[in-house]
Structures are given as C-alpha cells and as structure tokens.
Length: 167
Image (tube, rainbow, N blue to C red; front, side):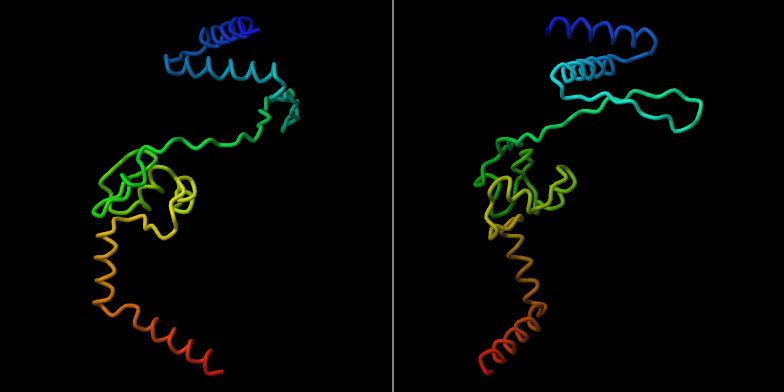
C-alpha cells in the first residue's frame, strides 16, 4: 500500500510540476501535502463532496475536506527547568530556552502566542510565582510604596472590615 501511495504521489506531483514552475521547497511541500491527502483518503479521514457553483454556467467543483480527530496534545519537554527559568535577576522561557528576560508576558505573547495562564498551566508553575525577575518585582513594589500607591486601597479595606465587624 505504501509503495502505491508513493507512486501515486510521484505521478501527481510530476504532473503538477510539469505545468507549474516550482521551487524545491514548494516541491517538497507539494509532495508532503499530496501524500498526506492520499493517505487520509485511504484511511477514511478525508471527505470529498460536490460543491454547487455560485454562478450559473460554471461546473460543480469537488472539494476535499479533512475529518480531524481530536488528539490529546502532548506538551513538549521544557527547555529549562523551573530552577533555571526563575532566577532572582532574570527569567527564562521554558518553551524556547531564551534567558535574560525581565518579564515573560511580552515574550510569551509575541514569540509563542500564549497567555501567562496557559504558560503556567502547561508547565505547572504555581500562581504565587511571578513571571518576572524577583529583583524587578521587589524594585517595582518599592517604587509603588514610595509613591503612596495602595494607601487608598488599604484604607478602603480597613473601613470595609470595620463595617463588617461593626454590624
């Protein structure tokens, strides 16, 4: 069966390449796509259906749709351990291994299209572990305290607590 698929794939790609100018990368992609499609057809994972023409006078087109099955995603092994990723002066990405970051949020969204919660869940990072360098967190916390930020919040919490205990 595999040799039949290879022969069919070769015939289809040769026919396509004889008519269309293709680079070597395009040729490889085409081979992989055609082979996967033929293999999917053989296993019943792809449907072929007739599509009605949108304009009169055109012929009906055949469409190929993959029937996808939900496969459990196996998370890749982390590039860094938690100890290597979270150091006092820097953090590193456990996905790609990039080190020397101050915070992870921007890197995760830009490079990996992940939200911090997804990253925490994927690598089982505790919620109390900040995704930023501890020295940076302490510095920002001290700056906020020096500016008096959080004073109103503390006062509001105190009045709420007094109301709850007083009632």
